[in-house]
Image (cartoon, rainbow, N blue to C red; front, side, top):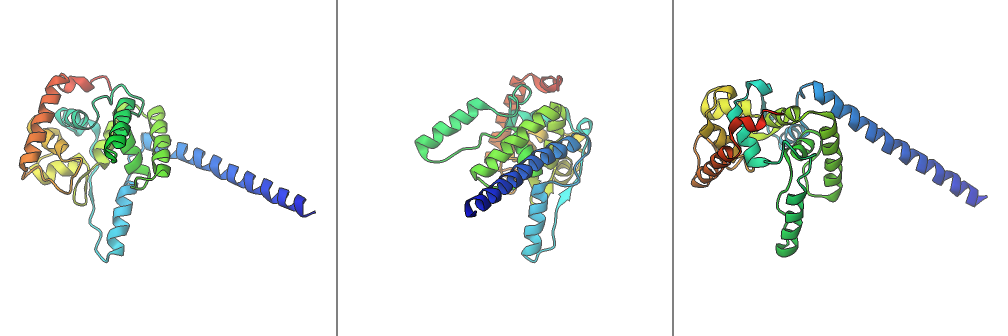
Length: 238
């Protein structure tokens, strides 16, 4: 009798977990499909920052301004791809070569360098929480795959350009162009675009309007990569 009761409870638990898993998969698919057409009013990372500021007793300060793809300078689009993910037009969400190199470096030096593509960064910043757990990385991979299947590359880059952190409480290249250069993102020159792209890995430490020596060196490298890629025409096929 007790054995049958245990079996019934186990079957119910398995069915419940299966239903929950299926619901999460379907829900994530619907969420990604919606953002394919609807510009997100905020990202998960923005929401986390807002909560953290509020819990610390601070008035939440987040500046976020959506800028359409066509309203972003072609130089800035290229600069971001040149700096962050040069294989972006061709990969399916993951740069396998960079992942293998990162794993090899971790084995040799005991630390893991970043190997995230633009698609993975969109998945993380838009839908997930920040952290280095394997669980979060696994869910990030699932969302990245959904995004690649559901969105065209142009939409992925558009969303990235708008939700990337570009300063303390600042999100999107449109807001960054106004704060740092007092002009819309559509009017940025190549050297200004390269400076914004150069500070993306650590936007709270660097300012494009007062660039450090390191930022200048990274700017020069990005400008060289932009020329090597063939200029803005590199992204014409998106």
